[in-house]
Image (cartoon, rainbow, N blue to C red; front, side, top):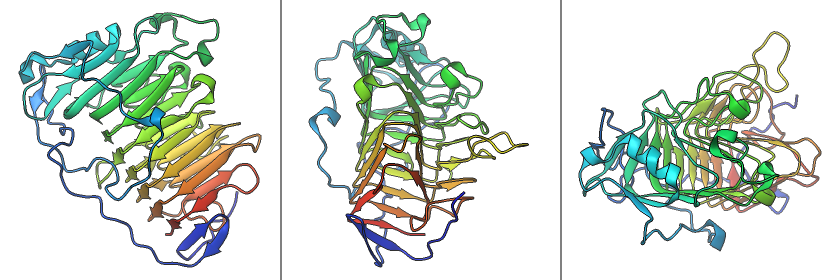
Length: 382
């Protein structure tokens, strides 16, 4: 294990170290166009407010690539609801996702929370799925169910390729949504994890969305993704996360044994103009687990493991995350040391000391290719 050494804020640019104090841009405040907050209840959607957690990093100004942009849903294939909260049910969401296509919601003019009694599952032989809440819709797992699932290697969702681990479709997009209280505990297919969303295969991106209070198992050496768990993306393309928030405020964070917010094995993330804060890795004993421990506890916000993959963070704020083992902000282990980490125009602060970390990078544990991470115009401090 490497000691957790750095005692000073550091500013890093293209591999050169400078001492510099840099403040964290505030990210509070509501937004009348923000997705609705969870309000509980059963049956149809319940009317909520826009919520106290802002969507994404308001100070993030990094341009995103075309592939990371929101999907045009102006001509949806299907609409959940007929204009009232009562018409927007969890079963209607499940049915719409099973049919595929571009999905919008018509739950009335106000923010609405839809309570999910079961998981919405993407079928691999149906059209690509885009869920667009238009800034008004929350999907609430009620603390008991995973909210959304895509798996090209699950026979129950129909095999459509001889290489299920490397097929182009389906392409899943969630945008202008809020995912709350998802819980994948006990759902151990493909290793489990992904309290709100689990994805294996195809492609996946998250745009202008919020994830709060989602969780998975509290222990386990390779268990991860309190909010999102991703495996085996087509041609090693990245999972895009754009202008989104994971946690965002005290008591709103996501949690799991590893990767409180995001987790992957052998999959790349490209994160733009987002906020990851107040998430927690709860396990104990690391990976592989120490004798006599259940394992886990690494990557308070982000957990990446595998061989050749990348993590790129642009214009984002990563703060106040915790981990009982390594990397309270970021745990990145490339077993064959080919992995690459890029940190640009971002702030990492108040990610508490962990059991082990990388010298000079508070909140990080990185084993990657030589010269990694490459850090530009970014503040990393206690």
